Length: 447
Image (cartoon, rainbow, N blue to C red):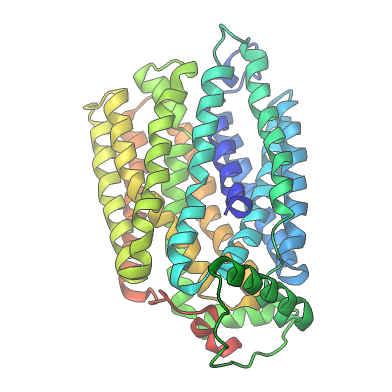
């Protein structure tokens, strides 16, 4: 849980730090960026995440899950140090893009491993619980910003750099946990490495037998799988558009909706508080902490229903309710009815539900496609969803916030709500009842 979930924690930390330091970076003694440039830097991070997920996703399916754990973490570490040393808009944007590439690559490897190492009866709640650690990173980033962006302790010209430097330091600590993670036995089997796969599973079984003080019962059934190895792009396209077109449409609609809604709100959270509510940059962290808490608790409290009530019902409900709540929050903001406090309370309510919805999107695209192309499928859905729903959102919101017009800003929130409701409709029509079923059962064409 720690070794896999730490990726989401790092992403949450990065996004929070950029949002929190955004107003600081407009000051003359820092990088002196405009609000549009801050939004563009957020988009650069997402562009890097898209490219990284595609490149490293392909390598994850080809070289294995574990090999990429360390490569992508190394990219993240170097890029975060580079961000702390940035000296203008172009260097800052470049290192943000490189940081995104490391995180995007991690998503493919991590999400594949989560699905392939998790018992079928618990896959939903564990997936959502691991994804929720993103918000632990958000909380950590908020606390760091409260301390390091307070000019009574450190000058702003140094504080924002230390925020990113400490994030890089955290990633070195993660290497210890990564060493404990096994390679996916499913990936090993599909590449003909039967002895290695058997050794890993036998080791797990021995630990379980020791823990329960009893011998595990023998297997009562078997399945045959084909050693497939390397999968071509033609085979991937055939699977997506010929074998499973409904699953492809479902995955795209869920990923696009959650990407736009989150990136529209979260990348510009500090700018909204600063421009429309007069919250000082050093105080933004106090508003981010309850927001992070709501997002963290949502998947934890709702996750078990995805394994009991089922995927279709829960995905439909979480996307639909999140869309309606976002619509209400956007309207209240546009009309000027809200204070900084009530705005934060509404965002907490919206994303308590939306956090579980977004996590279920990653769960869906991971479990509904075969092992030999799982990482690449996750990368493709993440990339398309982020490109369409995410990359434009921070730049668009930065431009709209700069206009100072509440209704223009709210129009982006209305679009996010509309996409979430469309995601709910697609889930009601096409979601697969995957709860309690093995991955091989869900993709019988590719055993």
